[in-house]
Image (cartoon, rainbow, N blue to C red):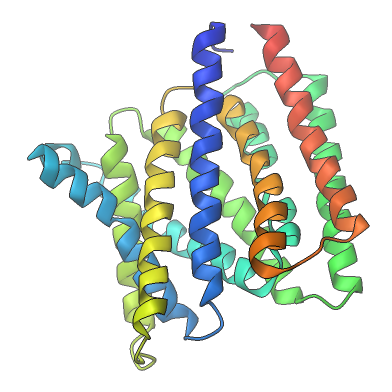
Length: 291
């Protein structure tokens, strides 16, 4: 396990919390117009604008060297996977309240932790095993309650698929991203996924109101910024460290869901959320003990 001093560790957590807060705001803006237009059109716009922060940064720096790559297959596969992630997660978030979406999606960091054990030879311990059990119990509680209450089953299924794909996408950064820049890892996956959605949206183009277009562009750009920050972090630390900050989205989802969408979470949603948060807390305790 990587040894980190307190200051560096605190900075890592702060970066993760900021990244997932940005993701939550971006998701919210896209969710606001999500049922108004064809999904492929929405995702084509949001994923393309997600690559704009990288382009703007490179123009400002007058340096496109960071986009140079020899790993074309890696970026192609990440782009395809990013399209699956964008479709499954964004559609799931559109179909379900955030207080239900995020606890289900938060099985991703637990899956990533165990992928780290298998593929990166990270150490296994009782904390990780307990965190998996507790997190998945929370996910099952929220999912089962949602199905029982008549919430959209497709949304629940899509978020489950999305969680697995997010873990694989993050793992690819740790496995193959050492010689690739943060900007190339972020840009190509988003740009390729936007091309995929653009092709899929042929025949479903429709006029978009200016206010809605502005929300989609802003939401996509925020997701792109969040991804830049997250990839930057994942390249530098053990997956377990940054993954625990993902749990902050439960809190963001509860607050945003109540303030923006007027959704009051049920006791079961809160109960499941506490289980998932407890899973992250176990990993946090173990990391602190190890450092």
